[in-house]
Length: 187
Image (cartoon, rainbow, N blue to C red; front, side, top):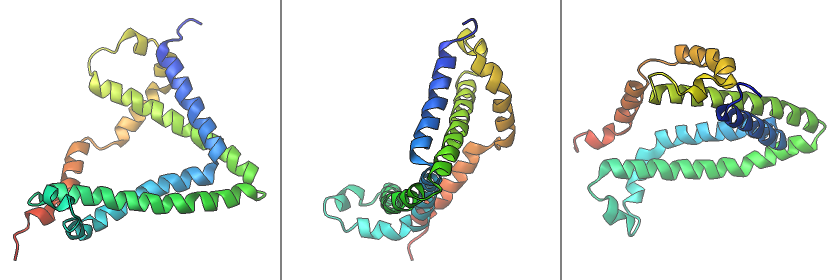
């Protein structure tokens, strides 16, 4: 097929695999899984500073993180996030399994397929955006001539217009507020 490149094959594989995975899991499970990641991240952001003193009492770990507040805070963040993910991973299959076994099971799978296809398209668009960011010059012919670039190139532009231009600055501000407790004077 003329104009079909490796990029097109990769994009098609990403979209198809995402759609099939979401079909097998169902929309409810997909949404709850994403919600679990978001909630676990929020919980970790909120409670990492509270868990930090507890980690300092863990044998073996206390010598490693002693005097390194920022590292201790990042480890606390990871611990709280993993605990949150484990909790959500217990309840997500229970709830989604109940939906799949009900009369809504077929609808759940069908909507899951559509959700997975949309997620696959979003992943392809993000991949094209990442390529443009990493390689700001003229794209490689394999990318420029791909049907993927032709079909999803306008979506890439629309998404880039919606993303704030100062994402690194925004992330740095969030990180600085996260580690602010390390820089606060004791007293």
